[in-house]
Image 1 (cartoon, rainbow, N blue to C red):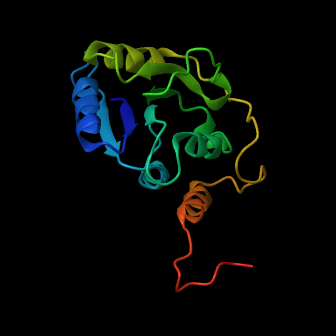
Image 2 (cartoon, rainbow, N blue to C red):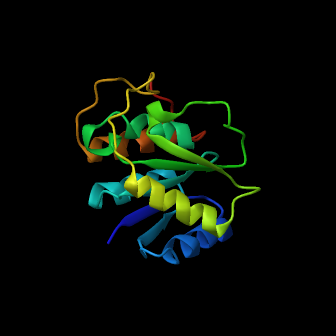
Length: 164
């Protein structure tokens, strides 16, 4: 059985996407994460076969997540379907592992199902990283990726001094 990770911070939208994925003819398992940090923790437990990713997320955004994802051999080959209200129609995002972009305002449950089926059938190629947000020589394990994403989303509170 295939495993699909859905990374969407709007709970209602996430559940609608998950219902669409689970209703597909091949009945893949779907797991919902509401931010990139939760998703990376899930990836450290089990690699998904496909990721459906919202771009505008609370905390690290979708492109920060994608930059980290393509920085590691074990996650760089996971096909990603972007789901966004932004228009990416004139952009080639294959270097991020993006195999398709769905527009939130026009997508249907059938579009979601077809995108998952096509992503599962795609021949994964290791994307070439554009310029990661973080350094390009991270250790090749998921735990380090989790720590980097968590650090990227942390901001010092007024009581805590910022690192020098």
